[in-house]
Image (cartoon, rainbow, N blue to C red; front, top):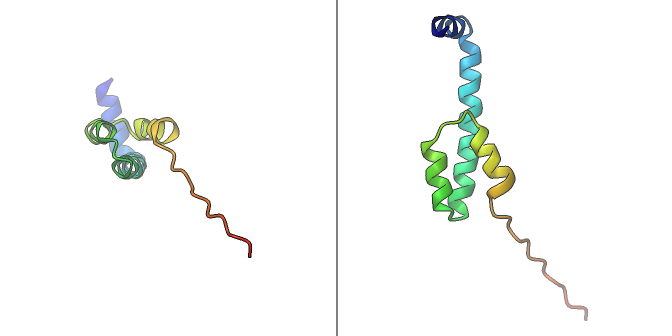
Length: 77
């Protein structure tokens, strides 16, 4: 079975590169957001565990801190 997977990957190297690119993009975004939000535990987990983009997407969708947008009130003269 493992030989079949290896042969398939060798025949379809483009698919492997696309999965790697997909994972790196999501991981980079999630690492950047977790570092910016000072979530050290999430940063370490995202940095160490490779899940082909699944864990970074879960973090970005459910666990990142939402930034509050400050609205500036204009004074009427």
